[in-house]
Length: 123
Image (cartoon, rainbow, N blue to C red; front, side):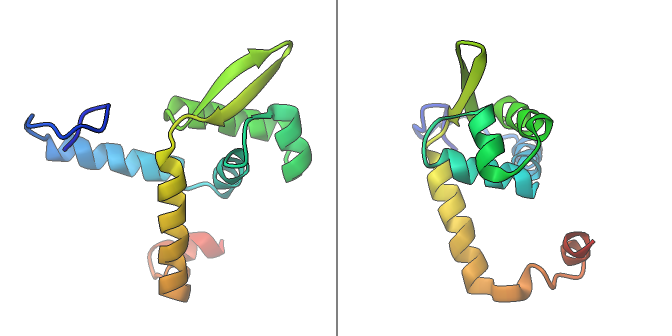
């Protein structure tokens, strides 16, 4: 276990809380639009208007997902005039999303064919 700075910690781990936090993280990443926004923010900071134009999503959709990602601590925002500029808050997202892409490539259709989660993807 490590602390907020990434330094290993000797503090006891509450396994249930750690698993619940991990599940919430993956739930936050579980929406295709949020992943699309994160992938675009990997290119650099963007205003909501720019994300809307680049991604073809409604302004309300982009704003709602950016707020969710900010609540999760994955993106941060700063005002720029009357606009809000979003950027990645954690460099670890590059590693996580890269690892996810490698895992998906390695498993092929296994995820989409999963009897439990695959049905949710298909609907």
